[in-house]
Image (cartoon, rainbow, N blue to C red; front, side, top):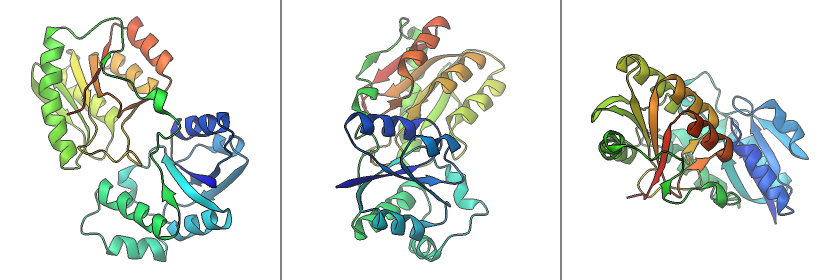
Length: 269
């Protein structure tokens, strides 16, 4: 059995490679040209670069390499769908078959096509379970009463936009929604919220989707997001336990503690 990795941007693909290697697994990497970091070349023995529109090439590579199970790791920005990429024939057919081009339907259709070709898509966290936090406060400081009220309010809003596949993050102040995520991503939402709130304290809430498909689009929080929170005067972060990947968790929590930012993992609804 041979494993493949479809690598997007960020550190997520490197974490998967390291975890797989610790278990004696050498993965074949299909690195997405528009997204993956160049350093991926030196992180694996076998790396093929594939354009975002080259679904047929991706499948051919995995079949030639004998890959029967694959993992998607690393962000592929949804807005790339509307960029100047040139889709190959397989992707054209796939896009034409979709009633809508939201994240679930698009990547779900890619997963189905891979499976039709004999390549099973595994949960992206298959080798990374320790990085999914259990419920509870992760920092020294727990959320205060005001932040708890904002978290409860924000989770209700975030669950609704996640259910509709619009986004998965909201920013709240005094139980009012300051900003809602769509295609731009969590960090852009935090920046926008900071400008709207005039540097007043804000709370960030990030949730998983109902029936979150852990094969793709898993919520991820890394150190850069918490550093941005400090700049934006975001004093608390709420995430879903067991469904959110914390990258560089020790550094992330240490930084949050130093800046008095509270991080809590909530039981998913």
